[in-house]
Image 1 (spheres, chains in turn red, brown):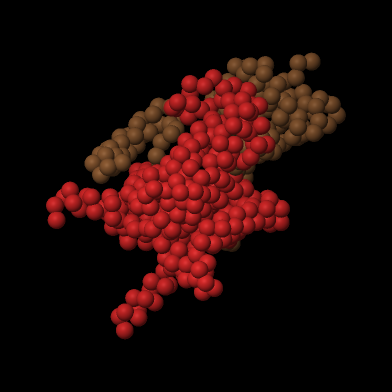
Image 2: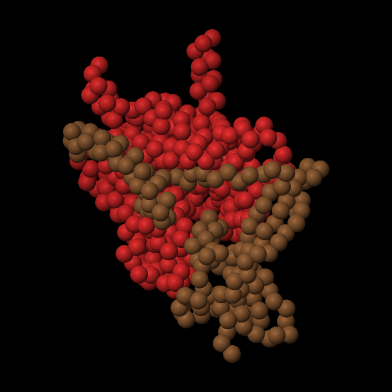
Amino acid sequence: MNKKSSFDRWIFHSYSGTPEGLGILRIIFSSFLLFFLIPGNGIAHFEFISSIPADFFNPPPGPLRLLGGYPELIVFRFLRLIIILSAVAMMLGFFTKKASIAAGISILLLQGAVYSVGKVNHEILIGMVPLLMAFSNWGAAYSVDEFGGQVSNRKIETWPITLLSIFLAFMMFTAGFPKILGGWLDLSTQATQGHLMNQYFENGRQALLAPFAVKTDSTFFWEILDWATVIFEIGFLFVLWKPQLFKVFISLAVLFHFSTMVILNIAFLPNFAVYAVFMNWTAIYISLDRFFSRGGNAQKYIYAVATGISILFFGGLKWLSSQNIVLRNSDLTLHEVILVSFALVVVIAIGSWHLLKRLRQAS
Amino acid sequence: MNKKTIRKLFIGVMIFLPLQYAMVGIVGFYDAEPWPAFVFPGFKSVPVIEGSFETEQKVFVLVPEDDQSDSLKKSPAELFPEIPVSQLSGFMRQNFSDETDFTLLSPEGKNWLLKSAELAADTDLMEVSLITVYEYRRFENGEMILDSSSVEQVQTIVMEEM
């Protein structure tokens, strides 16, 4: 096989999919975005930012420096409205491609405005998911576009998923590489423990297992975590060409974020929207199709059911989280804990299923 | 998009990503981390724990206008509750570092800060200062205990004109 054809195979055939599978992903991603991933902390947060005088305007180097101060509140409101409208349109599959592009661009613009307080949060991939998936034809099924006869071609493209994998792998590398330069692999220092102390005492991140972790004075334990973190983050780039291994690393990422959440109280929820893209949505579609087909030809209801369930699930979780029943003195939220834990359960279930399948085949 | 265009897009992205990373490194060294950029946080630094561990915290000292009352100490999170914890350290680093010259603050900036402090203190204030508190902790019998603390770098930020 020549280099060009193997390159093509990697671009176009690394990941498989069906219109229905991508349709379910689109619905779930959109409602996740709608309830949890809109940049900023809502209108009160935007009112605060827009009230800060220009003395405290610290945009990161880049296009935001063209602004002389924080944008007016109306700009925040407008961008937020565009994101909400485009996320709803994406979820319903209404002008899906245009809505996805609009969502991606407006997310990036709003992120930029929020980061002008002087700190960049590394959530750019939230915007990249709809921007790239717009070209996958993920509105071909379970969409208003489909029912309205706007979908002339049901052929889906999976190269946007491969492209997303490049962004993710490279960004993971940029997390791991500085750690090597900074001395994380030095056996005489324990970086993870040091960062835990900073998070615990300086940022007050003292929920879940943090109080136990801060008492753990084991050089061996912390050094293992240092090495595992670096190997895992750098490793993404090396498995980029092997989609199955890349998915294993995605699973490791879920485990990594779970442990980071329980120890350091950092959930990094936006990344889970990216990891979700790499799930086998076709298998989920087939399971749903089988379930609904039992009672007759109920497949057409999957659209409504998937939309309804995702709104109820994410919306209910958002409401529950806003009640501040638990984690009152932490910036970690209940929905973060539930969603990250849920992702871990899903990963363990998928891993166990694959393991059992292998064992059965071997016997 | 046809296959040829997509192929070119992939090659372009694979060339662009390392180049922008180099740019992030250069700009970050001389200024700050640029945005937009395709990078995740590196957490490059290694906080050292050798017997004891040092933490550094900025604390606002608020002096009430009514000079009968004691001064109040408020954390940045109390003064700026709307800023998420994930961004608060960056906000403080950019605006309230040891090198910040608060005499350069505009009247609008001073007034905004005073109002934020008064909201946090729930009283009128005559002065807002910033102190840096260093705390030293060490392990003892499986616990991280406070060994000592010191206050350095007292900076007066804003004073109500009498």
